[in-house]
Length: 517
Image 1 (tube, rainbow, N blue to C red):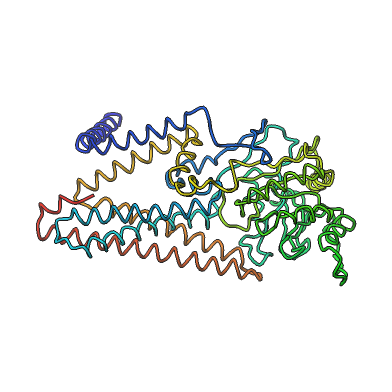
Image 2 (image 1 turned 45 degrees about the horizontal axis):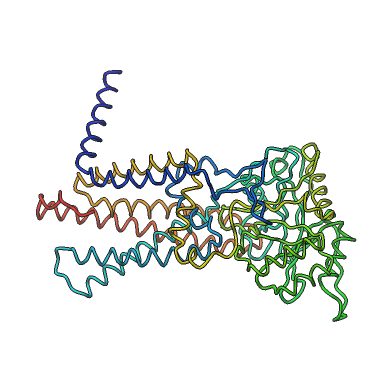
């Protein structure tokens, strides 16, 4: 048995040595790229937090980690993490897509120009367009997979068990635009390091049970604050977080001079013994901040993971108002079920919290919010969030890739080395056997992504089954359709590859062993 293992190892080593010798130049290029990635990850400065979102100073006693199982597929997750970790993921995603279209189109036109077939300007342009379409479609499919599959990314780990890690703004299928059930919501929050979750449905008051049966699966998940999110004016939205989920809000008076924020705050404070937080979005004007503060709110969101592009003037006005009025600042996810990469946490200092029950922890957190002590309530972020500079927005693929490389842990770097080496060996073996390695690997990637989207679509449909969550079912059907289309395209491409391979063998065996990249 031992001699057989040695022979197998010898054969593998011989094949690897032959591949490295035959494709020395390609191996050197990949090794240099991985070496640069490794060097960047070892630099003493890292843009990875945790940071205090008020002034972006590093917060002691806690750290941001990546889920270990995600590290196993690090290269596949990289496009999503590069975009999701940007100051504004929408700007970074758009910029990356534009550069990808331009780069792939240029490479396609260059490949068309170099082809041995008859060259025409129209043929060269069409090949460039096709390459750009394939590259952009594959990029968007991978991003869509990580968004629909809710694959968790960063999690906050605190050293002090008496720190409450809260997300005070999230949704379930009970909101008209929510995608996940309460249990899925809490499981995802637990995977990201939260110990307390505010379930704030749109215009629905306290529709969740805060008391969980002892020993139930939900009892092991984060504590829950029942709440709601409502409009308190033409531009403002506020969160009501309540200790008493059984209260009933009365209708506001018809007096046009009555401020809706003041009415809502009074109802939540007096009847629900709760707290009120303003959802800070770019729809607000700087003059609105003082008026909202006059309405009796307890604090403002300084960062919102769903709406990260807070204007700098609005941010400064919120910081100044909260500092002068003695209001707290929080960092929220506004999670509806899209994606799994959160970058925001609200850490509440609460001595003795680890010994409290779920309900007691939730009530203590609300008292801390009502106490309005900025020392006790810390908005924490994984990295800078807000408006990127013009240069960073334009060159997002470069800037965000450099940031991503500096955030890599040793295990994530090792994952890169392993997968690049594995794919390179597979590429070389396919090429040596006469297959078209580029097309084969692309078909495998699209097919695997399609399968993942099908599974995610079925999961989303299941989230809305048995209720009125038509939005979740609708998005699930769209995801399922996209996955089926990707899988079908992969199968068709595979059949075309096999057919072309057989044709080459039939026409010219020597031609079949010489294929392009």
